Image (cartoon, rainbow, N blue to C red):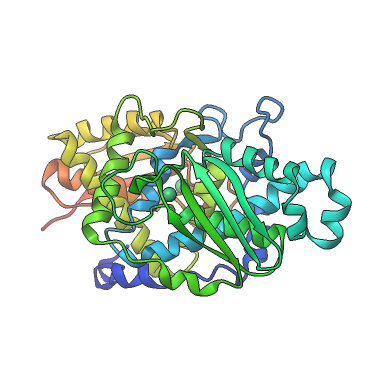
Length: 393
Ligand SMILES: [Zn+2]
Ligand SMILES: [Zn+2]
């Protein structure tokens, strides 16, 4: 990260639409080859398959994933459309990775030959399978209200979504979830599907309702940019949960931990869009780091880093090991949520963490810090490490 980064308009970068269809199968196959986390994604029955991360396991707290996804919105409110599209890519990948494994008992001969049809989606056992996956992944309690083959329309309800603890908002919040379901349908049914949320728990409705349309590409233009104020408020609410002891997501039946594959796929897809996206991702991390420090009143770099170490361990984001040297602070990150289990793909993947540290140190010390990824497992290094130096003003 050089001086040039300050010239990048992160709001504009956030507005550039991610294209969910182009290269999706190629990207999915690339992740499948290089990300070990894929291997434990389908293994719902833990214990049979060893986790990729020996100490933290392969699940991280969903408050953190929601902090990540919502941290882009105060920067660029139109990023809601990208959250939707990231959901779409991840929903497609997950269906592709997980469903064949389970469908083999149910309908593999059919699934393999023809792709599942809308008629098959009417099948209760297929619906149950998807619902089970959603429950496991911390998505919520999914049910199919309507599957209309003729009209090419599907309506789903989701209770206990990750937006369950959010309140005082005027817009639906589950853009990512709407994308995930659309991605599932594109894998299961084929063709292009797009969905829009019409009811949302966060708005005070009793459940979230997503309506999905075949060839419904235009619904994306109905997804309103949230206001800066609302985006900040939602991020603050998720952060408060992440920083609290209980980390209660307002749900009683749904798992609050999600598989690391989701975070890794979102992060990789975002970072591989363009070099300015690295700046955007770091900036989003900085916003979060600054907010953490504001809340905690750390007073010193050491205090801030100690606290972040505990927080990241609690949320299962990684283990920090902090080394103080005269000229800089070196922080190694073991079992990083963003990069652990990734082969050498010639890319550093932990820049969001660098952003959090930088924002946090700036705010905690009143000095200007530069935190950079020095090494990363995904770049062929043995460990991930961040270097933190204060900049002369
Ligand atoms: Zn919702
Ligand atoms: Zn790394």
